Amino acid sequence: MPEGPEIETEKLHEAIQEEMEKEGGGFLKRIALTTAVLAAFAAIAALKAGATVNEALLLKTESTRLQAQASDNWAYYQAKGLKAAVQEATAASWEAAGKPVPEKLHEQAKRYAEEQSEIKKAAQEKEKERDEKSAESDHLLHQHHRFANAVALFQVSIALGALAALTRNRAVWWGSMLVGLSGLPLFILAFLG
Image (tube, rainbow, N blue to C red; front, side, top):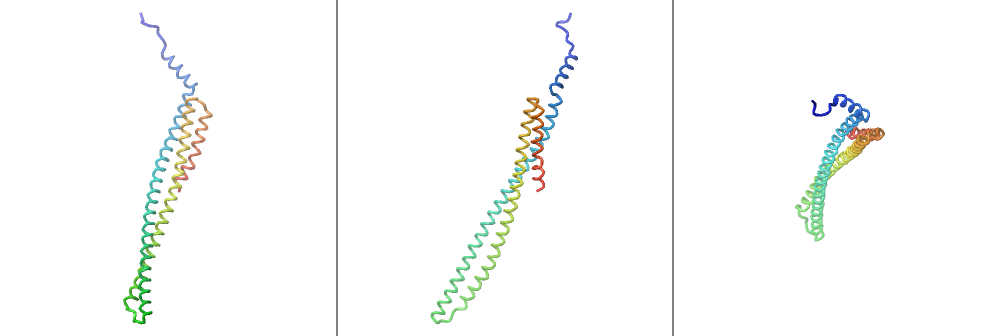
């Protein structure tokens, strides 16, 4: 004698499966698949956004260092100019006194002027290098913003996908896919440049 009533479990299992199909089991699988794909894109875009902003900040730091070096060079340039002016003023004093000007004064003034020319060239090279680093940094920041915006759209799309799964609402799922697809051009453009 059986201890409890016998229930045909195979038929019950089939009935549950049929109900799940009616209730959206296949639909839930499609939502899960599209959400997983969007999550993969979001992860890649987030990594690239972080990498580009880090590189941009590094370049900005390098640009600032180059600006400091250029400023140091310009201060040195001015100091050499002052030294040359002092030598010329001293020579003028000798001439005003009617005395012969020591050759050393003219030689030092000439040397300071030549050094000034080299220092000016070095300062201008540092400024050019600074500008290049800054421009490259600006470009990377622009790229970062594209990646970050793509991440935001992918995240909104994923959230809408979760809402669609909970409510089993196809319109919300289509909205999720539309938002996700709108993030793809930003994602691609960020990679292109």
